[in-house]
Length: 336
Image (cartoon, rainbow, N blue to C red; front, side, top):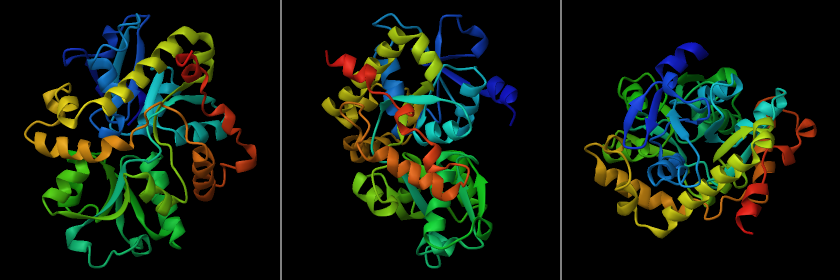
């Protein structure tokens, strides 16, 4: 889908769960695009909005959504949005293509993703080596789920031509793709994971919801969900960058000081609909994986760079300056 068509189709969330189009944005509005706003891994974005953490210091922030992080990245490059809530790995990927963006706040040191296998194929897919000849679901081509799936397949000896990647977004579209046998396995996140496990339609192959599972599968922590923005914009708007950073850190702290039930009570009903108990359970299991301070794990960037350079020859480790892919300046400021 083209950038223009995506921009016309994207959904905008504003306080009070009302919706509008981007045409309604004021010129001084900061627009943040989330790669799937109802995904638990990106929970700090909706919490910061619902709890007034953006508005309290005087920011006018619109939070909009696209199903796949790669689409949000495109919108940032096009200048349609000022920031993205997505995976940190895009900062490295974009630097390799000549665009400098940086993470201001890291949400967790684990991706929160799970490689699921359709229950009907669980007997013949025991490891990623068994992906050969199969159709695998990812949120979008060029997305972080694409990167991670390629890495896991390569780690188990497969070439990129040995399997097919099908962009199926997340939530219902992912579930429907598996039910229709368009994919036999795929990478997705909560609450989609819990829904498919609860219905016994899928089984876990690789679990990246914890740092321990992530280290086992990827060789180290994999800082994933974050707020990233163009470095030029951040340099030109340091006060806004500081306020945004503080708002997200407050949301992370809220997650650690409130129960899953209390957190879900702050969310729009559309997030969970008739599956509230499932959503609460999924959040309760994952919320301790969230960072308490928004800091980058010490060896995280190197792990991410190693994975991207393994699957993409254009991402040369020697050409990437990791210090330009994230900043702690505004986190340090919050401690003064």
